[in-house]
Structure formats: structure tokens, C-alpha cells
Length: 368
Picture 1 (cartoon, rainbow, N blue to C red):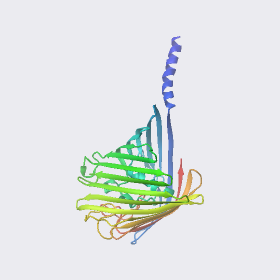
Picture 2 (spheres, rainbow, N blue to C red):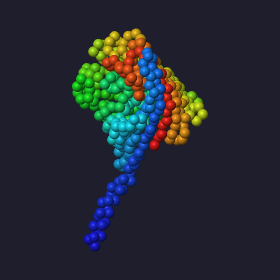
Picture 3 (cartoon, helix red, strand yellow):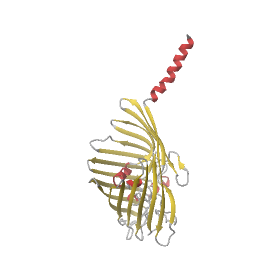
Picture 4 (cartoon, rainbow, N blue to C red):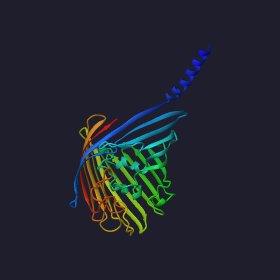
């Protein structure tokens, strides 16, 4: 009789976590995006032919029902070097949080709300990555980092809140507690990022603001503002973009405006995308170079892309594209993903000054 009671007790203990596990789910996902690139560079600099892995990743994500409409959410996402091997465990969006009818809260390392503008004007056929990515000029993100003044980056030590969808509107706010990682040992460094998007029928729009405090150095406060919108006419979707950047530097203020236009649509079974961006000359009188520009004449640049994605199945596609970053004599923008690094760049710059890059792409992507 005692043996039967013990067996029942053990079974009850083992059944409890199994019952709880039925309210949770875990998903393995990922993608491999690898392309063949040929990059031709002005000024007699060496051209390159290379294979590049473009934001390839694998991850685990899951939810657990906690009752009353409340869920625990989590994700561990790692980068994959599909071209040469390697990767970084949990180096991409990794977090734990809670989700309910009131929205969701996340804690961890992930992209900021400023990045939420990408789906509105970004290059969908290449999955917002490769040298076709539309953030070479936008956000001053041509191969740079937070320490060099970019505004579209993955932020460590972050807390983020996202609203639920309210009649087409969604908003997000994130604070990155930079701890002692700020340049120059600025222990009060932090990043504040916020954005709102709205979708109603054929219209989609968004605004975003991001401020970096002491991230590049003590007493250096930078901010960026973006507004973007798109209208889907059916066969063709058109979109536009505006951005203002404002930096503190040891030699004064540094500002820059950017405009962009583009379109995408269907052609046969695939999708095409074209885009043009123009970054105006820097102003404010600063002599400091931050990323792609400084102030004064010939610090402007433009970026154009054209691409086509041909699906082979629901999970596999091939794509082709062309990307051109054209710097004036005193501008130093570079490709956002897989920038050109064959020639040394001056201090503070994303690349050599005054170069033009012409990139041709043939790639394939598989989702799993």
C-alpha cells in the first residue's frame, strides 16, 4: 500500500511541470542569406569580389501563458557567419519580458524603436540587409557604431515598452543603460529611443527620435529625428523619408539633413525595389568628422539601390541588385552592411573620403 502511495506522489510531482509545459511553446527559427558581391571603387582603389553573409542568424523564442491574458516572452538570437564560419551566441536580439493586452515589456539586448522605420522604406527584397541596405546614409550608419555616432544600432542593457495596436497605431520607447561603456569613461551615458508607426489601409507612416548622451564622450549629446511614409497603390508602393542629425563636438555643433524617395512592387512572381537618398552638406561650423560627414562644402552624398527578388519556394529565394554610394570630395559614407575596408579611413570616418562605390549583388536566402 505504501509503495502505491509513493508511486502516486512521484507521478503527481512529475506531472506538474509537464502540465505547465503544455501552456508554453518554443520555436527554432533562422535564415541564411549569402551573396556574391563585386564592388568597384573610384580613385584607383582596389575592387573586391567577395562572398558576404548578410545578417544570417538562428534563434530560439518562446512564450509561456501565465494566466489572465499575461504571457512570459523570451528570445535568444545568434549571428551566423555563413560566408567564413563563426558567429556570436546571443549577439543579436536577445531578451526576456512580459506581454498582455496592455502591450509588452522587454529586458535585454535588441534593436531600438528608431530601427522600426526600416520596414516602411527599407529594401525588402534583400530582407533589409546586404550592401543593398538603405541605411548607408540614413542614421549615419555606413559601417559605423554607437561609438562613432550612428543612430540605428542594437542597444545593450536595454529596457523597452511597446504599446498594443490601437486602431493602427503602435508606439515604442527604449532606454539603454550604457553603464560604463560610454567613450571616455562616461558612466552616466545612455541612449533614449522612441518611435510611433501608423497603418490605415494603403497608408503607412512613422516618426522616430533617438538621443545619445555621452556615448561618444563626456558632455557630447547627439540626437536624430526621422519621419517616413508610404502609400500602396496596388501594383506600386511609393515611400519618402526625411532625417535630421544633430551632434555635439569639441569644435562646435554639427548638423545634417537627408531626404529619400523610392518605390517597390511586383513583377512576375517576384518583387522589385528602387531607392534614392540624398544627404545634404554638414552645417554648424564644426571641424570634427563623425561617420560620413563633417561641416562645409562638398560633404554631401547620395545613395541609390535597385534590386529584384525571385522566390523559388515559400522559404527560398534568389535576388540580384545594384547599390551605389557616391561621396563628394569631403564626404566619407560607406555601405551599411559589409562596408568596404580595403583602404584605411581617417579618424572618426566610416570610410575613406571622397570615394564612389558601385556594388553588384547576386544572392540567395533560405528561411527556416
